[in-house]
Length: 243
Length: 351
Image 1 (cartoon, rainbow over the protein chains, first blue to last red):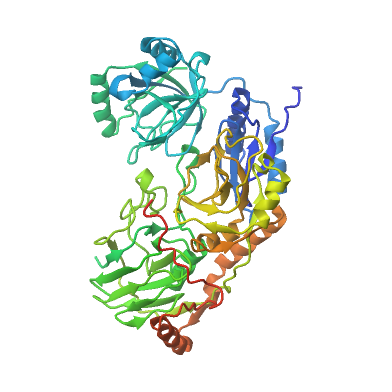
Image 2 (image 1 turned 120 degrees about the vertical axis):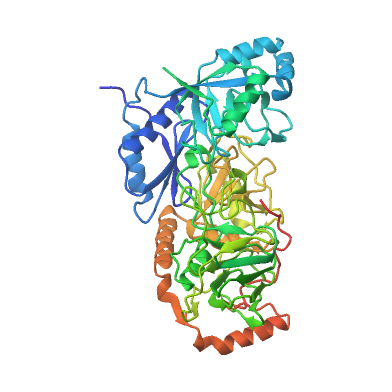
């Protein structure tokens, strides 16, 4: 019999959602429990639960209070959260091509300077990483990845940019991310990918799932331009590879 | 195809329905109507399912005309002057535009959003089961953006059904109810007391993503950054400046500011209709009370058809109301004492 797991905190998010909090911090073990609870709720649906939203450290469970109340749902979630977390899961693995630096990654030089190394070394460290989609949030397809090397951790920018390009690959704090739509960001921009994690009129519309594994592979600007055209036409560009 | 054509319309007006829940795990927020009760009432008036797509009209005026056939509509939400070719349209009633007639809507007089439902709904291509506009995500139909002059909404020809009014619960300016959490432990008891003991005003820089509140500064216990977690409609997040923001249907699906409390779902539509600059208060309630109110609200939505009334009996009142409006008095058909003549005309533009 496995040792009892510490129970998550059940935090009310109004009358129609519960934040199931496993940690206050970015914590790999907590994220694995979040994703395990998310899968458990999908495998054993609870009547009244309408939608779940995994994040780094918590699972937001939306529900219909006409069908089930806070206390009853909370009890059932706590029971599911006690199920053992699978050591390995059959998560998908994606290889995502990135054009690093230059006009596509305008912060690469500054990141290298701040970390007392060369842009080439920053790219090498980023490409060497084995990442997991910890959560997708903020705007459609914005995928937050865990697994960034300690040697790439650095604080976010003092002044967030109001507009950063679609497909931006960036780092911020202990995280790296794949941003789909153009939008504001306070992270450091290392490069861009042609991969659309969100694209209407494509099947599937959302490419990545929370829990998927991701690695990056460098491409040159010419390849990026070709891939960008193909992606616009609906190609995935990201390759699914054997785990 | 018959059409309702937009001659003119202000910013912050868009096609909205019940929204598209189900993809928040991918960062896609549901969007949907700001005031769900008003949307459902408008649709009920013209015989549509409650969360059928309708035109959410922002605080400014608008003009519509029909092309091809008569079109039957209903108007609910923020009170405003309205007429079809000079015939007054009372709040919370249906009315029919003959082919080529023009419906003119004035500024919202108290409140922010009105709903113009069209009998038979709006023909469009649903994405994730919804026509609701979410401009950032490129979603919404017939137009994936706020409405503008010249836009055409395909509509069915009017059925000729008798016009109706709908009797909604009396408006109230009772405090907006909240439940604490999910991160109220990021604030001291004194700060929580300050939050519920103070008057708040809605800032002019508010929109469908969030309503900024102005009032006393709420101090954080451990700084204003938390590890991002999920948000809901009504989340009261407190950024670094200590002035809370109520997250609305076009919010980000996750956020990194502590959320001191959450507006109960039954009161959220009422909050969306509080005019900028108008003072209001919050009141903390238990989860049991919040969920009892949610069930009552669901029952109200379910029984809206029982609240339909024949319109003949109020003809005189409509005329009287219109005369008063023309004379420049801010009069509400709901409760003249409740709504305030503060305009939301200055709230932020399109999303």
